Length: 217
Image (cartoon, rainbow, N blue to C red; front, side, top):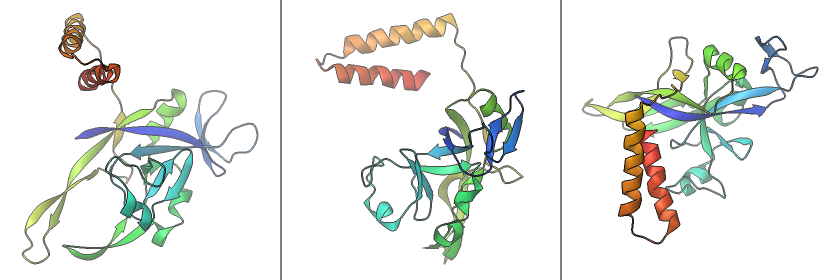
């Protein structure tokens, strides 16, 4: 299964991705007129203590207090942080809680879980510097587990899938093309939604249209 995730680019003081004058991709050191940059892929998924997060231009590590106080809508301590699941910035993996690994206790016993963001594939980096975009599609797979006593298999949930080289399995979002008939049907649905909504609240009507867009576009 694939899920759309945000991708952003932020300034950095370390080795960077950059685009030279002739349009070729290279890794620079931030010297000269080039502005250091790094890419980050963000997710709304639940984070754990030790995960790397992003909010309002800042990158930081999730604390136990944040994990304990996060609200169902993702709000915590005055912000809506997003989990960094992949990046070109290796420096953020070299600091923090046990070098990005969190000691866990669960039905399968004690273990170390690697919480470091994964690497972004080269083809995504090259595509971004040539023509920036704000979304990508990340592939997810079912994470299997075994109960501690009976060793019964169960589904623990889903997790981001990795390529053979260890990079995140991510692709560009395919641009949808619609036929005239499909556009006419969506316009008709929008009209019907508007007629059926008898409320005087503009915001509620706006939310029904946004729902229609989300379901079809």
